Length: 259
Ligand code: NAD
Image 1 (cartoon, helix red, strand yellow):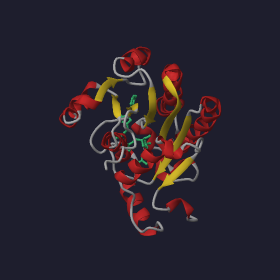
Image 2: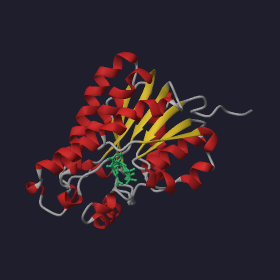
Image 3: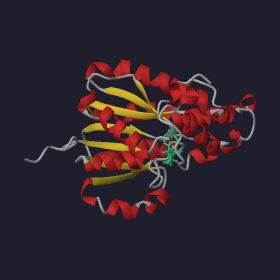
Image 4: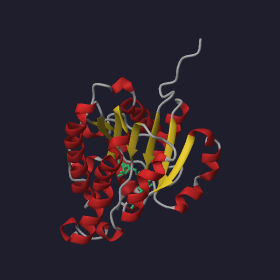
């Protein structure tokens, strides 16, 4: 007897694929293995081109769109581009963030207004934008997922500007969960432990953070991309039908420790 895969017949869109190490790509791969049709969204043509080898292997169940959330004209075109591939959306993954590099070089106290507003716009308002633009295309019962980090709750010194930005993302998630709940649409976040991806490389002392997590977390190791993707699969699936507005830590238990 063959068991039905978890996402057979389901369609959705995943924002934030830059390369094979992206959390978004690992989630896309797992969704694909479980039978989903996925539209992959890249920030630009360069990332799209870099992923073509991998995409070709899955071509019959993958669509591709480009959207840079700093470009209003691309945001305006987004819905039309998505509708070329899917009309009804069962799941949406928002796995993107940005803060200007120089904001990590100074103290948090020296954060510029320009850097702060841009980080909020790309890392937080993009989620709101997506839900606004695609609201009418989300199926009742659709599941939305975003990615956050412990630096929103506690001071993680190198995380700087991204701490308040992720705190804002988490609050937006709760308000969105409230507004979307009446249609049975759920929205949750994974608070992932540190993983060396291209976004993480810009955070000062990231290697030290990895070593510290490995030594001190209850599971005495770092989290893997696959473990984050497996939790994503659960939250995006009907197995999590009673969960919304939630932030699940996937960090080998690190968040339970006192500093
Ligand atoms: P990544 O670099 O692979 O992904 C970041 C993505 O953001 C990239 O695809 C990039 O193109 C996209 N992006 C940046 N600016 C954009 C813009 N203007 N328009 C559209 N897209 C834009 O790194 P990742 O670690 O996979 O990050 C994914 C998410 O996971 C982020 O929200 C990050 O904060 C979060 N996260 C990462 C870690 C970690 O340790 N890597 C831990 C917890 C949470």
